[in-house]
Image (cartoon, rainbow, N blue to C red; front, side, top):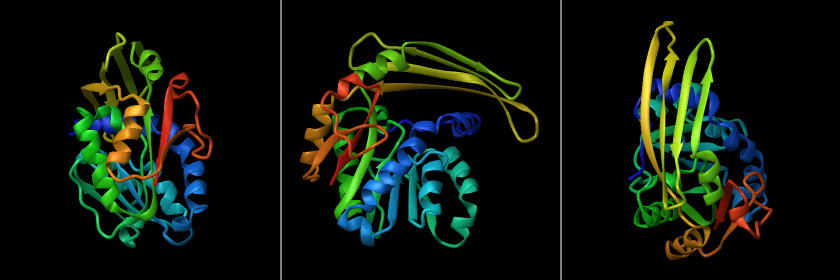
Length: 253
């Protein structure tokens, strides 16, 4: 089971400041998928752990039909607000479900997950379940793209203290990583809501490192015949040394 965002104020903060990597990757993912045979005909997207809906919105504006899945109702509320016109015309829908146990019909052409979901799953068995559920949701010849933090990303992203303060929020991230298979991350702070009142948030996450070679093996076991590691912003550029990067993309078909 994945680890959902538990507070409304953290969902709002995340929506404001944590969507950069996903939106940077979106144009390259779209261009790559649309160059495939399935992408010529099937403009449908399943966004797993969709968060506040920025990635979904990008593809909706590109003409796709979108299904977003997330375990956090707070995130889904933000996503629904962001994509309200598309919800009203039936172009998208959002489901509250875990990545290891969702069901989506009909099948889609493209499945994505940008937000290092794989590092938030408990173990390899959960990763295997996620891959298998996604394979069932994607048409033959479709594409599955997701990102992951590497060991380098753990060292540099989850090993220290980061503080950000403005007139509308105070955010503190504390991370601990000692080189093993997991890292600990605590986020806390205050966020000003729409009524001008301050709301406190505090959440803890355990991040699990999954080696790139293990990810590729689990993809193959789950029915994805082809899989490779690529640049985090360009799924056409393979990486010969994934561990030299903080964040990487996996592309499966």
